Each structure stands twice: as C-alpha cells, then as structure tokens.
Image 1 (cartoon, rainbow, N blue to C red):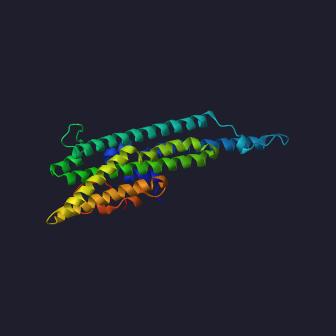
Image 2: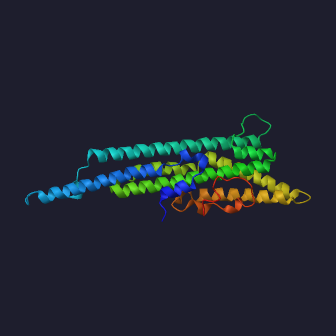
Image 3: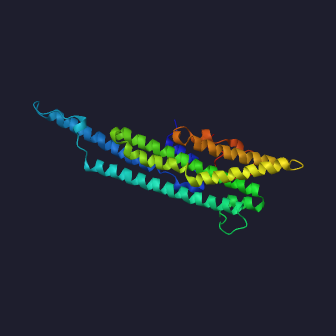
Amino acid sequence: MVGFGKQIRRAKRDSWDAAYLDYDRLKAIIKDAENTLLMDENEQLLEAEDAPLTSTPTTYQNLSKSDRLKWLKGSFFRELTLEVEKISLFTLQQQGKLADEVGAIRFESTHLFQNSNSALLRNAAIKNHKLYRHLAVGTEFLHLLRFICLNSIGTRKILKKYNKTMERKNETHSYVIEENHLQQLSLSRSIIAIQNSLQLEFNQFYFDLLQAPTIDNEVAIQIVRLKNIIDCAQSIQRYAEIMQQPFMNFLSQSSMIGTTVNFGGMDRASN
C-alpha cells in the first residue's frame, strides 16, 4: 500500500507545491517521538529487572517522559499549527483570486474587480468568450477544493498517527480544532459565493442555448462541461465532513474530456 506521504507528492499540483501539508516532516517528528518512547520503556524495564524484589513495580503509565520527548511533542504541534496556518492563508489567497476573476467577468462594466494573472485564465480570456472564462474559473475552483480535501485528509491522518503513538486519546479534543478548521474552508462563504456565481452563469448559458434558433454543438459541449464542474464542486462540499474517503471519488473526469487545457496533473491523479 502506498504511503500517504507519497500519495500527496503524487497528487500535488506542481505550481502549488510549497503550499501543501508537509506530511513527511510531521511524520518524521512522530517517528522520533516513537523511538524515544521505546527507549524510555526499555530503560525502565532494565531498571525494574535490576531493582530489589521489594521495590514497587514500574508501570508503563508511570514512566516519566524525557526532555527530548517533551521537546518533540512541542515541536510537532508547533509545526502542525504552522502548516495549518500556511494552508489556510494560501486557500484564502486563491479564493480571493477566483472571486476577483468571477467579479471581473460578471461585472464587466465596473472597475471593482481585477482579472487574475493565472496563465490558465489568461489563455481562456484570449478566446474572448465568457463561457470559456467561466470554464477556466471552474477548473481552478476544482483545483482549490481538491487542495483543501487533500490537506484535510493529511491533517486527519497525521493526528491519528500522533494519537496512536502517544496514546493520548483523552486529549483528542485539542487536535480536532486544527482538522475542523481545514474542513470548514471548503464550506466557507467565499467558496459558496464563487460556486453560486458559476451556477448562475450556467443557468444563463443554458437558457440562451435553448433560445437560440440553432444549436451550436461546440457551445453545448462547453456548457455540459461547466455543469460537470459545478456538480463536482457540489459533491466535494456535500462530503466535506467525511474526508477520509479518497477525494478523487468526488471528482469526475467527465468535466475534463475533450479539452486542450493543461489541468496540472488533476486528470492523472486518479490513475
């Protein structure tokens, strides 16, 4: 079975590489803590064997943690907090870019919004067609939701690994805060607003298509693709609370079929 650290590396979007959860680093800290626990246990067992028979037996629960173990615990949560902060801020940054792009398309007569510098969106803008621009925004939107899903799964897994190593099940409430913070990003108002804008535009495109005297097959295909993107986004959000399932279950490749756009590896990650 492929380790989750390798799964993250394989599923990363290259241009966002530094923004992902550093799963391997956190796992290495847990491994050091696990080794320290084993060393402490072995030392206590040796001391118990050498002690007089009248001495009080040393139990695992009464083993004192070394200064190194305490440092590793603190180091793990400092690193985890920084990772969650990094992921959250990056997500908010990308949400802002998408919101600007959606606003620039929907409110062309105003100067409230700035077009994004995304290469994908610039390429779509060359076509000078609102439908293609919304397809580009929708694709970036899926990348963002996928990013949130992957990091939420990674956070859950690394906390589970920590709990298993430290055997501190009575303190899990202090870890859920970080995990829920990531999960809530996929249900934030900004995310919902972007999705609603895409839905409104799809409704208008579909209505215009039905009202046209003749059906433009190319436009019809692109409208179907936009609908698939919206459906994928809705599925991700619908299952945001059960992220333990592989995030690719919620992404349909049908929205990618027949395009010439570079999807940054999204189309290959489910293989």
